[in-house]
Image (cartoon, rainbow, N blue to C red; front, side):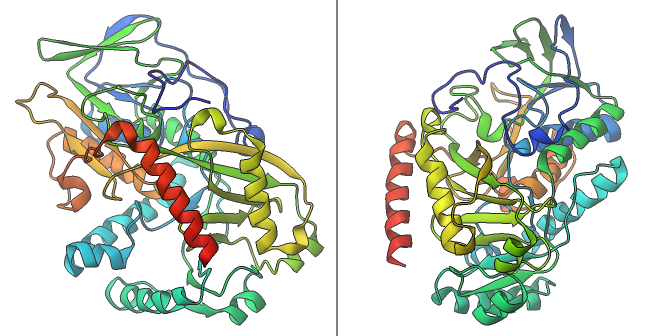
Length: 449
């Protein structure tokens, strides 16, 4: 498997992974490769949620000639591999943590941006007629230990009083009798708005919107070389090149090793792995206590997340291997299956129909960042967005819009994630060792709990 911490190229025009999403027959026809030398006003690298929306806004609102270069096809990376959770947030900092770090006023401003991003997903789906199989809302944050119930009460009070939310705290009995019967949960915090989608179908819908706005998309066109010539950038692909004054990097967790100095050492790519079961029978769904099709995440250091899909399958995910070459080892699938069965003992022995992994981009300060190189620097004309920490489905589309606005010289909200570049990891070459140590601590913490 491609490993962005070790590999200098993501490959070229590889098929979509054998995921549940890709097997639904929605991948569509591929975009052709760039096969000539040309120019453009702006070039976006990466056809995921961020890049596609940045390109669309640049063409639609600013009448720019925009080209998107994608190594494979739209949604091939994390945009088409994630669990499809449409949440009001990003990064790893919740409202309470934002308030503690930056103060209540700044936290409220961040949350307004997150809420706008959340609402924008539905608006774009309506605008583009994107059928991404949106499910009935209901997001449950599960307390895997009683001590988290007091934290949930604090979060509920803060968000309901100062952030305009209507969250509900559920006791263990209320959760299991009225919502879902997860045997590992001691209670939950319920957000009634958040919902699930087919993430690959969403990405493909975004690509159609970008194309309708006048964007030119090239698949099978990884950037293999980058030359700077008299204030312009020449990007080399296997069969052609493109020259432009401005480049937007939207590769996030799939950014190759040593791709650009502005990003080198500033992201830790982390594998998230997912399994999907065969369709549950009505009796099995009843035994699991499912009411509707909830999306769920727990409070463990090494979190698990799951959702009941429209066809009755259960999607279950969590952290996978540390290195890409180990991604397909059976022990990671077995660990997820074991965790699923601890939550729902009635599903012991259930068959797994799909399994896959994808890279998410973790930042040093647990926040995503947008950044534009100063006009007087050697990297003038280059900007990027990334570092969503595995929670970017909603926010990344708005991040693409903000990146487009920033590139065109417009003012964007004064928020922590827009003020500073991604911070470089200390001892960046040892990031994997730090990740391994964190996983050991996380497993010890979760087992102790």
